[in-house]
Image (cartoon, rainbow, N blue to C red; front, top):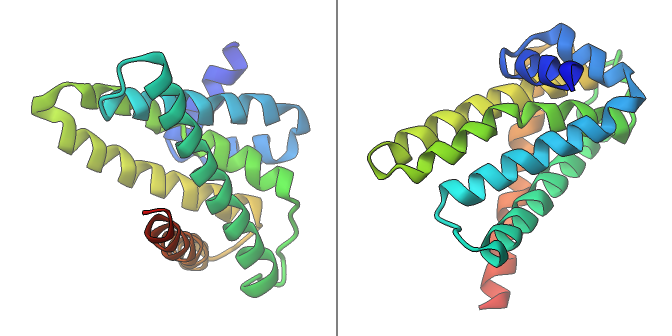
Length: 170
């Protein structure tokens, strides 16, 4: 547990060494997924989910969106926009991006109406920065702008698919 918390704090501090550790440690997958789940539960609570069904539903949707973004980012970063030094497997990307969700735990504070919007905006930006650092380390990029471009492109494709899915579902 102590190691998990240490890695969560390191990831939240955008510490590249922390991301390198979890990338290399195959046993950290459970901790990465746990971190993503806890951050998703916090987001569900922060957005107003109060009963168990609402929390579970929102958490499930949030986790699915994270998985889609991770897979898209992995494919884009390893197949479409890799650097010569890029070498990664999906496990490395899941482990690093799972821990990049660490700041998301603070989204639970969005339950306080007077600070909800600033908390959500601030934490979302922080999580985006953490995701970019995670991808830079997992994909062995030397360029932070490339890591940002890969993350943004993955998010953009996901957003287009999500909007299309919502339109079809409605």
